[in-house]
Amino acid sequence: MIDNKKQHDKFMLLAFCFRGKKLIDSKILMGLGLNLLLLITTMRSVEAASENARRADDFVDSIGVNTHLFYDSSVYHQKYSSLIKPKLLELGVRHIRDGCVRNLNGYMDRLRELKTLGIRSTLVCDPRYITPQAAVNLVKELGTDVVENVQGPNEYNLSGDGNWVNNLRSYQQQLYQGLNNDSVTQNVPVYGPSLTDERAFNAIGDLSAYIDYGTINHYFSGRHPGISGWGGDGYGSIDWKVRMAKKASVSKPVVITETGYNNVIYTSNGHKGIPEDVAGKYMPRMLLEMFNYGVPRTFVYELINTYYSPNSVDYNLGLLRNDGSEKPAFVALKNLIGLLKDPGSSFTPGSLDYYLGGNTTNIRRTLLQKRDGRFYLILWQEVSSFNIDTKQTINVYSQKVNITINTAIAKATIYVPNNSSGSVFQQTYPKQLNIDVGDRPVVIELAKN
Image (tube, rainbow, N blue to C red; front, side):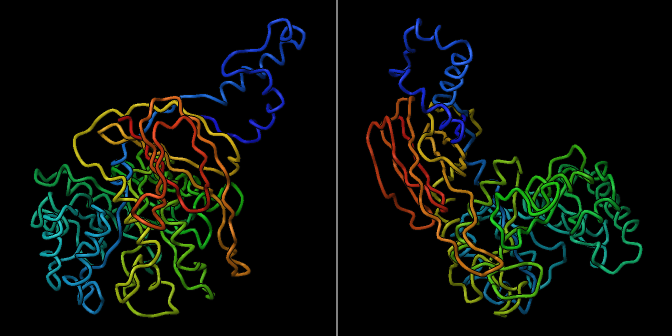
C-alpha cells in the first residue's frame, strides 16, 4: 500500500489519461514517450494495491502496563480491591510488569488472583533485593501460569554500584541459567536488563546468550511518538532506541518495558511534560507506532499516579490520577482495546484491496483483521499536538482522506476511541469513504457481511 501524497500530486496532471483502469489511446502514449508510460505505470501502483492485514488481537496482546502492587503506602496497596483490580479489568490489558519480590503485603496472592482474571505478570529482578536462585524459587512458587516473563535489573546503571557492568552481567547470566536449568521454569522467557542510555548499552555489550528478549525504557520527553528524532542519527526515535537495545540483544527481539508521558508541564526535569488531553492523543498512537515497528510488547508506565504529588514527574505518569479518576489516555486505550480485542486460536489474516487519496500528508495507518473477517483500518496524523518549548497546545486541523475500497464490503463503521466507545458514522456497501483524520486515531471497521 502506497500513500505518498507528494508522489500522488506529481502525477495528478496525468489523471485525464484514465477512465477507471483503462489507459489512454496507444497513439497518444507513443507520442508522449516511454518516460510517461513509466510514470503512468507508477501512478497505477499508487492508486491501487492490496495490503495484508495483521491480527487485531495481536495488537491488543502487545499492550502491557506497569504496576507497583507491593508498595504498601501507595494507592496500589491501599486500594487494590476497590480501585486497582477493577480498573485493570476495565482497561482490558492482559499483561502487567511489577517487582520480583516475596509475598509483601499479600503481593503474591494478588498476582495469583489477577491470573485467574486473565492478567499475567512480568517480574523485574534486582540483585539488591533478590538473588538469582531466590528468583527462580519465587517463580516456581507462584507458578509459570502466573509469571509469563522474568526480567533482569531495571536501570541498574544508575544504582551507584561502582562495578555495575560486571555485576550486572554476572547477575543476568545466573538468572538466565537458573531459570533455564530448572525443569519447572525452563520455558519462562527471560528479558534483558533495561538501561538508560547508549553509553550504558555500549558498556554492557552483548548479552544475547543470557536473554530471550532485549529491553529498553523509551520516554519521548513530551514529543509525539512517531517523531523521526531530535538529534543526530534519529536520536530519540523508536528506531534509534531499538537499535540501542540491540547492542545487548543483538539478533533477539526488543520489548519496550517502560514508556509514557508525564503531565507536569512546568518542570526542570529532563522528562518534559504535556497536558492530559495531549497525552490522550499520543498514547494510542504510540502503541500503534510501536506495533507497526514490530515491537512484540510495550508496557505503558504506569496504571495510576502512585502517590499524590502534583509537581513530581515520577508520580504523574499514570493513566489514572491518584484518586482513580480517568485521564484521557485511559479512556482512549480502554475504548481502543475494547473495539479490537479478539481472543481465540490463531488464524491467517486476509488482505484488503484499497487505496488512499486526498490529503495524506503525515497520515499513518495500521490494518488489522478479526477472526470473523472484519477489517479495521486505523488512520491518524502523526504530528505534534503540543509545543514543549512554548508550552502551547497546537491546533491540528483534520485532513480529508479519501479511501477507495475494491474489496467487497457490506458495511463500514467509523469509531474515534478517544471520544467514545460508540460509532460515529456508518455506510452500507461503501466503495469510497471520505474521512476527516486528525491527531486522534480514527478506526474504520469494514465488515464483509
